[in-house]
Length: 608
Image (cartoon, rainbow, N blue to C red; front, side, top):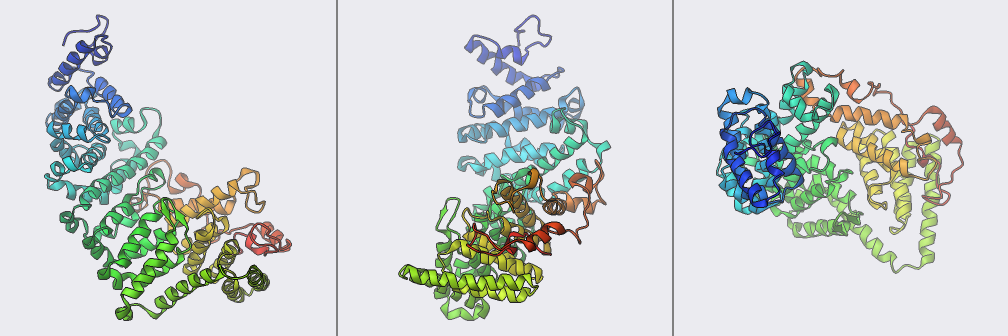
């Protein structure tokens, strides 16, 4: 290629080519550059490739380079790196396969036409070689990203699927990605490859920054593998390969972590699987997956609606109904007061209708449903009838019922203050039976108070159920601070770290925005008890936790307590300081925001 500028030290410099003012000359020079670059061995080749990487991310829908042969060039460069290790180790060429695969992924993520051009350019086979681990996990990450984009489009999916090992490789990578990144990079600071560190931090950080970015990239490697698998899961012929019990059992635990919260990860794939009858049959056979789906459906997870979809489809399917109804019905009943969840309108009504129809359609096989489940569903249906009848009830009668409920509630408060927790729980149950269904604010308080009783009675499952009902009744959904905190503690008692962590974080967020003096953060400081729980659950839900335990602990910057704060004595962390608790005990009962003349103890996050 002719030199463009006399003062440039690199013949045929790509950056000089791009400065050419004449559009036709520039296109001709770029075309020549793409054709000749793979056969050249000059130093400094990584510079134009990194420039193309930047351009592809900034302008992924620009067809100029697509029409000039960028896909053919990138595919050839990946092949060169795979076949010529001497060239790969020379200068900074080690970066080139990574950048080349990233460029392919960026240009194919939005435009099906570009994906078709990429397939015709022969990019799939070299990407599959990277996916197989021919280089390192860093290249696997960008390869699975690119293949996931190509598999998204109907016109290019078959080309990806024709490489029979792609699905199996993606399943293996989704299952092992966290351990791969931990053992090959995170664990030993002094053994990290220099170019990995450079790619992770762009030379802007030390070992601590590298470790944080490695966690993010490990999560992306797993989530992008799941996205690729998800493309196959829409095709029934691939479900048998995907729905292996050992893989399905792992999916609920693949959640992306706080570093990649925008990915539906494992729950997204489960939702796709549950859309088909064949997939539902496999999922229904794994009790651990059903239990996890119920936990996610009850939680404040961003992907709560996906879990609810799965549960509804499973109970609506006659072939899976009898296997799952006893496990799923309690979760759906807890969620029956949801009005709107994202794009889902009147979701609670849908849940009630589905449960009612299931009981009617399976009337002849009611023996497959436990008596307890039947009673709970009947109670739910009765409450809906009660709500309908209240619409025709005189206001005076509703006020009388509300006043009666208030009296019983205050009796419960008194019993709670005297230490009679069981008696208080019973009174709150009586108050709920009296309280009008339309009095949502009052019912939120009653459910939340009873959840606190169940916590102190060491009944975490019952506490989760009541706290969830309070959160579903509350407006906005999942934002009642006291119920979030009580459910966070209940999840902690059951060892459900992720769910506890999400609720604790939301609790702190609600406190930061609250005008309630009992909830608002004092001097903008997160309460010590909340901070301790968050740190504890961050350790327990850490993406690399299982890998670090398997490989004998963390060998990086400090240890787990350094990463997430000093280790607290988890057996003794309390929920309020003694002084706070004493002040609350002395405070007059007056909670105007929740229920006129309401109790004082419900303002305390916990009394343990």
